[in-house]
Image (cartoon, rainbow, N blue to C red; front, side, top):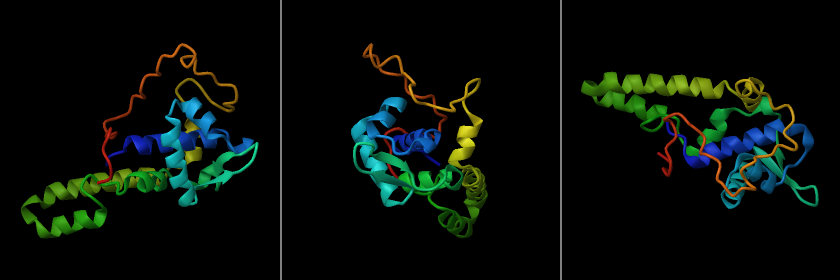
Length: 175
């Protein structure tokens, strides 16, 4: 399974919308600032999420984006599949099952890949945005993100890239 930069940005944006769920629509600029994301790229991501009916846009002075459903009803697997496609390292589960049946001399390897895919899918399908926020960062909680300051925007320094596990495939697209 690979999570692209696009997939990671989508998850980070969704976490902002989850933390600020009760505050109504949040402007793209505010989401981008809060997570140090490129605003133009974020616009495209949010449009994709809107077309998939995961978020909705609100027009006007108090406009922006908000979750279309409660955070407890939005699963990580839904977001990752939308942004990055199948969860398996070699395509979807059906493709792996076909390889297991077709290539007997490699079937043990493909079974392991299928088990990895199934375990990852199970975790992502059973983890909602609400679950992520309830876990909070180590030693810190974000009950209200209004007024959060990055500190490095004013100095012009870029915030360090998030330290993501090897599942992040920078610059790679769909499988």
